Length: 102
Image 1: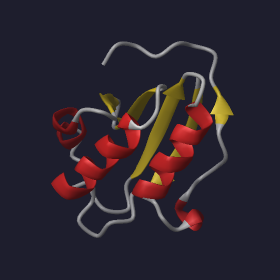
Image 2: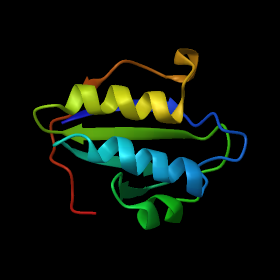
Image 3: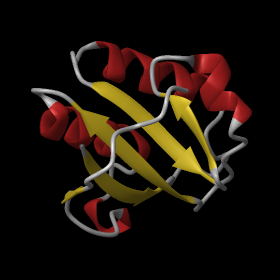
């Protein structure tokens, strides 16, 4: 499992249109992808779960992926949420625990 922190750059935060884009991007990969914010997490393939996180503008979130194409999935999700690389807090880190079911 790998993680990456990014700041959501859209002035409206993670709104419905951007959340739909996240779902499209996440669905291209076989890896399980999660977005964490405020002690909660959402499956990146579920628009309802993503909108439930109520992510505002300039909010930092953690992207988590587990699977064969996890690194590519995180790259694509980071590009969707924070197109400017300066809004990405750090490169991917490997985490030792497995993701809980969202």
